[in-house]
Length: 434
Image (cartoon, rainbow, N blue to C red; front, side, top):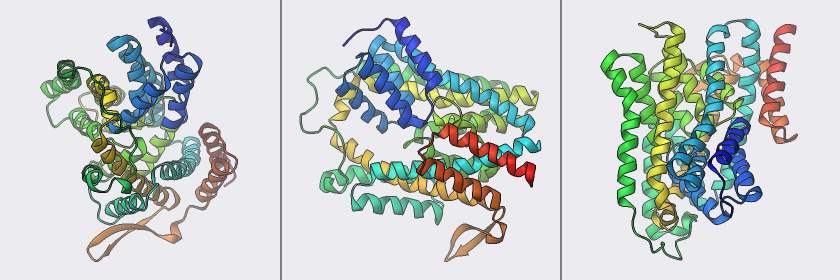
């Protein structure tokens, strides 16, 4: 292995931050090629061990892996540099797109473009569901767990954290008695390394990053009070940062449920627009939270102007979403090899990821109903409430674009960016000719 200089690390992760399109799978593959295969800065076993542990942590695993690589190469300053550079380019683009959306979404050309983007997003989410399902569901029990998670969300509207924590607890218990039901990954057979336990380093990291995480929230509370929109945005996304297991697609269900149906910060259609914007930017897909924070504050700006309030909402969302990621990595990095040899945690992760497939299936159905139909009806069956689309309200142009996007992705193997561009252009064409 070679030891890069700090400036070499910064240059590489600056480039990765600009090129990290394609979701976590593509981003992780890009880092593997650049850091392991081409430069040899990290060896293969260490990279895979860190990746497995990052899946155990809440938050975007690709950004956490980037932070770990920087930490492994140059300590805390390397982790800060690599993790920040992975996020900053996409965050800057996302802020600009959010501002453009807030001021121009009502114009018919923009609305037509977003009709196409929303249809393409439906195909993209369906692809993510199938890809994650194939990788995750390798036992009959995991398939049943995914189905139960889907029904718990769709029929019973159980809170997302309950499903995540319940699945993890079930996996933890089953790893003791029926590990073959889960087929967890990891390396429990060779035993943990014979090194001192890094309790002091972990405690210092947790204390420092808790203070960093809480600092802007304390300022908002002091200056604006607990009823201000910026406090509500920061508190909600701080909570979200603790339960975001399974990646952005998984947590979108919970975020949509709360911000659309409970807090009314934006509509279901606007949530889909935000996901479409996040798909077009580099960096982690969880940057869609930044869009939600911007729109929520933009619409309740006092005592600021709408633009300033929206920008502050986007920035506080960004802070409370990614500061915890640094906390998890700097606290857990010294334990990476030991956690890889923890079969109970691996069992919990296996069950959790199986439940996430059901969560993403619910998200896919939610998107499909809101994108393809103009009206939803509320049904009550045996005490269970569910939303069902009115078939007479099918939006035919959107459905055709969604079918075309699905053909591009599944048969033509087109990239996300190409599919989004063609779908948005088709939406504009429908508007011009209709």
